Length: 336
Image (cartoon, rainbow, N blue to C red; front, side, top):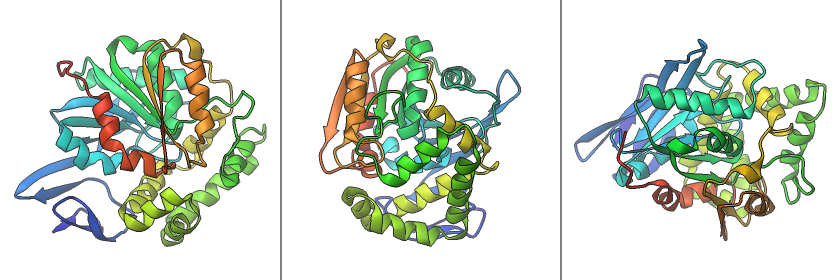
């Protein structure tokens, strides 16, 4: 079955939604899928205008009338990075709402932003969609954004999860077990002068844009074994990630640079005051968010549950266990 949209991008899928080949122009936006004569839309380029005049971009996947779950993407990703969730969310009756953070994708840059600012953006988006209650989860750099919402909007949140999440930078062992290239960007982000950080991120962007095939080969060769096997077995996950990352640079590198600096500064959050239940999911072979980060959260968040998953890493865990994660987040609370 052929699936195509606007540019020269084309995907070929089996009936179970798995990709068997991909031709890319790196200009994917939204598209429609027809399976068994049923057509549904992946709404990838939606926006609202916030009270302060900024634009907030977001995408929706899965069941448009299903239980609402907000997903907060990882660092150097965007609203497009959750496209892989569509078919599973659809089957579970779940509506995935994935917003771009400030300066990322379609969302306006926000001067002097902090992690706690994110909760008001999410609240405005929920209001605009007429959603009163919802669940939230975040991957990697999405973790502090989950915590920000729990500190201010917990009465509207049904359930919350952190997947392979980033942690505050100010505790002993924060980089223990981390892959060296990821340590480097943390070090650069912590420097007062942004020059090295900006150069590193600009190089990442140019590599993604100009030679995506090389990046895919790097994934398939150098990532931890579970991630490497995933990228070889299901290369569509790698291409989706690359496309979502390219979209994060849509307005340039300023939004990505700003967020990296936030990761290594004071988060202005008291984790021990977050009494809301939080599910923590970490893979024992993750070298980007090592398991000690999950253990740190388990110690700091008084009502958290830690799931340590064997033979999983940063990319593989959320993709191989998405169904379990979403079922854990879905509640019987009335929609709306």
